[in-house]
Length: 258
Image 1: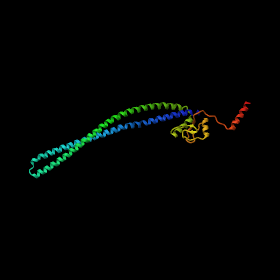
Image 2: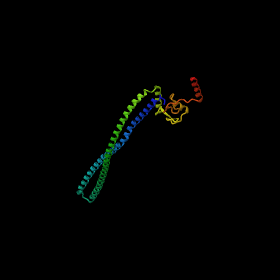
Image 3: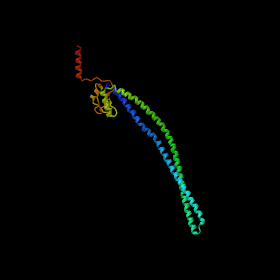
Image 4: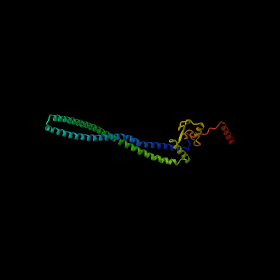
């Protein structure tokens, strides 16, 4: 492992954890809104039922007033029967009373229909009240749990961000600037592990020479495809020399010993 990258690797772990916690906190309002949806639906249903009951009650009262006024007219019409003098007037009077009674029956039917509608709306209202009570109870419980989760995440975030600040101060400034730029560009990880000759960031095979360079850990190298800084999770490897170079080195060592 390249010792220059050790603090950066730890910093990246912190950054990824911080990003995960922030994302979880970001989703909490949406989860809360989703849990509150049944409460809103029950309230809307209750409001609609209440408005319907009010409207139907007003209509029933209006119809009852019409019925009362109509019954008064019929009573007055019957009182006039004694004043009629001819059979023609009497027949006309009977026809008028018949029409009035028919109209009265229509009003009574409308009143009965409205009463049935009121009864149905009252049932809907009662059901909505029951649903609202259950939904509010479930919402209160879930809200308490989400509030507690948010507090827990916030506390952990504060701790991790303090560690992040402290660790950033231990990283070489040039490397840190490079890391921050890569992190902003990649939107995820600035460093990628080298494993089996493959960059674990973009999952592409790397040139053998680059693999050897990364393993020797003499400098910081980047993936030529995704540009992430590469690290090898192992001890730095010594450079493998060509046969001619090895023979020259051996001759030099023998000469020195003599």
